[in-house]
Length: 208
Image 1 (cartoon, rainbow, N blue to C red):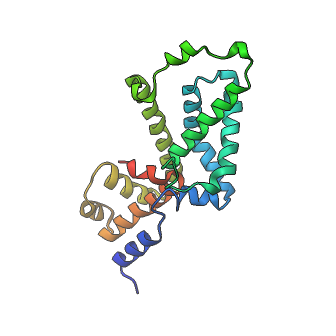
Image 2 (cartoon, helix red, strand yellow):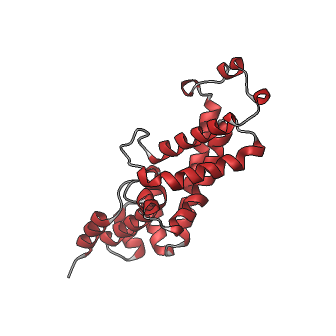
Image 3 (cartoon, helix red, strand yellow):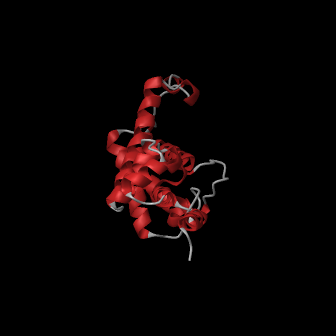
């Protein structure tokens, strides 16, 4: 019979540990549930990026739909070591391309002048306020993922995860508080992190 420490080790070995093996892997497998969850989680962030490309509000939904369509079609070819690197970087690249496609279809009189384009800051010249706003968009994405996981997790498991990882309560102290072994606390944390990786990929590592 396995002891608690063996169970924790086996859980870690079988858990998805990267974007490719979790979030992307589920999407590549054609999971309808994971696709719907992806759309729910990432649509606000995609909209934020679309607005950063200065797409008119009236065209935002069209560009969003084309972006989602490109993700759905192209997810099978995504690999973490591709040119864009991370999954989030890949998504950002798709948004930029679909925005460019959108502007190419606009009448000539609606195209922004070259002087106006030159006045737009390049990424290295981002205004601190813009960076903060993007960070907030990413924070909101994580908050939505956390809430989805919390809704599907027992209260005891969630509390052990949250108190340990986010609030920094020692494992030994939580074991006493919940009358469980320290291995059980680690297992609870691993289960929640595994679920978060299924939804967020490597971004789950940034939750603390």
